[in-house]
Length: 344
Ligand code: 5GP
Ligand code: MN
Image 1: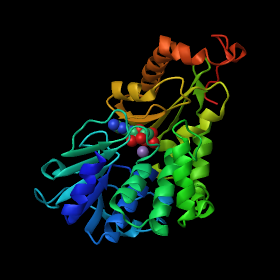
Image 2 (image 1 turned 90 degrees about the vertical axis):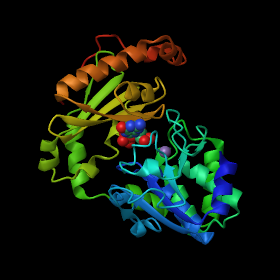
Image 3 (image 1 turned 60 degrees about the horizontal axis):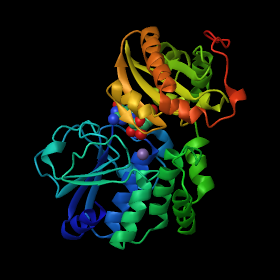
Image 4 (image 1 turned 120 degrees about the horizontal axis):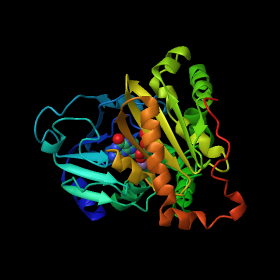
């Protein structure tokens, strides 16, 4: 818990920080904020990650100091390693991590208590919110740079303050961060309005693959290696595409598949709250949050889509999902044989 983390920081000196493979805005923002906070406290600290920092987050303060590593060199290489928003100890993709003193800091509901210290707060909208509390608890000064990194974490993990994890506390912290020097327009511009042309071309291809199931409530789309080549896009250009179909009124759940190798797909699940997609992701060996989760699956694209859509349909039909649905006006219900869009 928080007091153990504060005590550890007080009593130790050499720290490393890591997060999951293919880091997102919360992983990067929170890791950098924690790094800058520990530097404020005159600690020796480094951020280490297996994967590179996505382009959208490279402008964040401290991002160029992140070191890419493949493993930890030796047991107890650091006094402690902070592991940010990882549901299990394998998520950072770094062998040797289990031979370190591990501090697990997370806000996922599906997380395992794999750390020597575990600080889990599932009420936090982002780990960034927890890091803000940690700054308060350690008495570290929240500099404009720290504020910027935490703001980026909140902004991205709440889907620009759209998702249901956005709370009064999230906005209160965001407001304080702005007062402390975070510039919302500049951060949003760096993250959302600085995309390469290839990203939009890829979006066009992916959106033309959009389909929905017979109920009209589940949308599914994919990015294949062929589409990446056509758009001259990188895998990173596919980030964020999973959210778009939620723009449709009747769509409750989205399944986005990205081909990372022949017959291997990264699945991203998104929901408007009708169901807990973390449960579905867990069923397929992954995890995540109620409204955003993911996993890696093998097989033919159509086969994976059929199987995963079937599981999502089951979840939507379960009593708890029906309960959620009954909170909405009945006119919103669609006939079971609602028209189906095939292949754009
Ligand atoms: P995304 O779809 O953006 O890759 O991931 C959405 C959320 O699900 C993130 O919070 C991420 O941490 C979690 N997530 C994605 N993939 C996996 C996975 O393979 N395993 C686990 N445990 N969580 C995942
Ligand atoms: Mn997060």
